[in-house]
Amino acid sequence: MASEPAEAAPQGQFEGDVQSGASVVLLVEDDLFIRMDVGEQLREAGWTVYEVGTADEAIELLRTPMMIDLVLTDVEMPGKLDGLGLAAYVRSERPALKLAIMSGHVRPAQQHAHLFDRFFSKPVTALVAELRTLMNATETPADRSPRHGTQISTKPNDSRS
Image 1 (cartoon, rainbow, N blue to C red):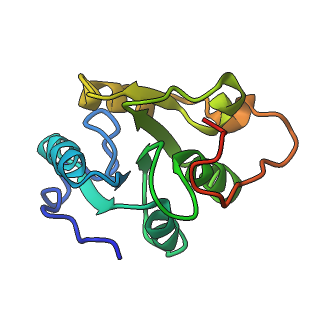
Image 2: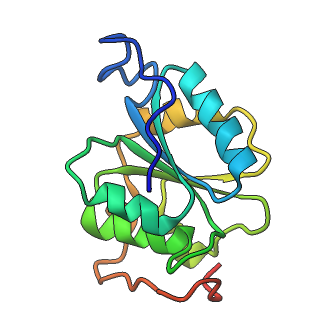
C-alpha cells in the first residue's frame, strides 16, 4: 500500500507553481534506499511525494481521484508490471500525466520512447532541475505516439527493455 508523504508542501507555496515544480509526485521505486534518497530530494524541492515500491501499488493510487502531477518510476521492478508496463498504463488511462523513468541497468529501446517524457540513468544527478524542465514542457509522448493501442505486458522481466 502507498505510504503517506513524509512532509506536505507548505500550504499554498507550491500549489500549481510549475516554476518551483510539480505539486504531487508519485515515486515508484523498489529499492528502499534509492526511494528514500530520491523522495527526500523531491521533498526538499518543495514537492509532495507519495512513495510506492511496485507498479501494482502505483496503479492502485492512480485509480483513485488523487491529484498527481508527475510519475517518476524505476524500469526494473518486481510484480505483475515493470516500469514500462506502468508507463503504458499511464499513457492509456491518464495520457496528460507527466512521466519520467529511471534505471541503473537499462535504457529502454526506442520503440518505448513514446511511453515517457524523460529518462534518467541512475545514479540520478540534477534530478530536481530536470523534473522542473519536464513540468514546463508542453509536448507529451502521447503527441508523438503511434495512433494504435499500446499493449501492456503482465509478465515481470519480459524482454521489452
